[in-house]
Structure formats: structure tokens, C-alpha cells
Amino acid sequence: QVQLLESGGGLVQAGGSLRLSCVASGGTFSRFAMGWFRQAPGKEREFVAVISWSGTHYADSVKGRFTISRDNAKNTVYLQMNSLKPEDTAVYYCAASYQYTVTSDRYAYWGQGTQVTVSS
Image (cartoon, rainbow, N blue to C red; front, side):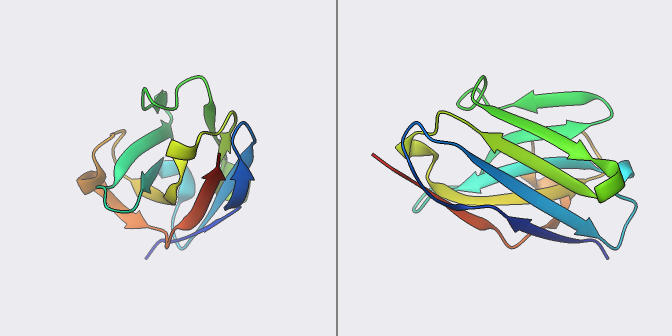
């Protein structure tokens, strides 16, 4: 059973930066595609970014501002978020999939989420 634990969320002013981390345990981390998703109040969960051996892919809304990376030696995936906007406010989740995909249903394992709040 893979367990994922996110950290790094918080309150930041618009234009600021945060770096989220997600540490995995209980599985072979390098085999997974790792994704970040977010869910704002009253909205559906949405794809943010994914990274695997195939490369990286971003939602249009974060392209050029967010960067996903991973350190397989540390079983950790990161999401560097720059130029944050109030509309980035959400709970951010990391997830692990056996496929390189943007579809949340194809992610087998999920973290508990970390809150990111961007004030205007």
C-alpha cells in the first residue's frame, strides 16, 4: 500500500511563491507517474501537473508559473508555485498512478491534501 504525505501549503500574498512536497512510502516510487491536483471550495477536483519517465505536463492555467519535479532517491515529488494568484487557492493533492495521465480516476493512491490560500 502506497502512502502519500503532502506538506508546504500555507497562506501567501498574490505574486508570491510556495513549494509543495509529497513524500511517498510503501511502494516503488520510481515506477509511478506522480500528479498534483487541486480542489477549490464548491468546485470539482482538477488536474494541475504530472511527471513521469515520459516527461511533464501542466494544466494551461498554471503553465509557466508552476514546476513539477521529483527526486526518486528521496521518494519525493515537488510542486514549485510562482506568481501565485487568488484563483490558485485550493486544497492541493498529490497522487500516484501507473499511467502518465491527467485523469484523476486513473490515480490509485492519494495524499490527504494541503491547503494553499492566496490573498489578494
